[in-house]
Image (cartoon, rainbow, N blue to C red; front, side, top):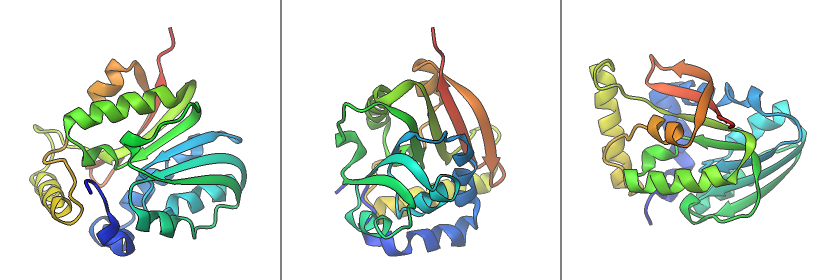
Length: 211
């Protein structure tokens, strides 16, 4: 199955800490302050679920969370997390196959789009955009490469990671596709921006440009 992390679910968090220290964690936790109380949240590709515990430290109750993850083993790990009194609905599915009539106050995508080729990114982006309330926030974190400014080691590390995950998890991506154009075309504005790991990781809070 494409983009499935079952084979490394048990070691994924450890592996990320070996390479990035706590930078992958901080790139996501810095976004959580932007979640209002009582929010309806969609987490797309949540991995092992540690983010649920971090969310519950800020909001111990009152949240309604939909947690979509393609890896069954990741879901099993996430279900063991302490989520406080928040309501969490775990859905084992690829995000491109997830369908709902709900509108969410928060959409959370961390290191999701780097799995996909451009065609899939467009599909997933459009689907998620339709699920976000017009006054909602899109919390986003991912790797970032500037062909002219990024360091050689960042480009090399990205290439090695893509090769590794293509072998282990059969991800589709062979290169990192910039996501800024999708948000610009979708009429989103960067409300907040955070940089990590010498700029190799970026975190954004997007809101819609309302007409």
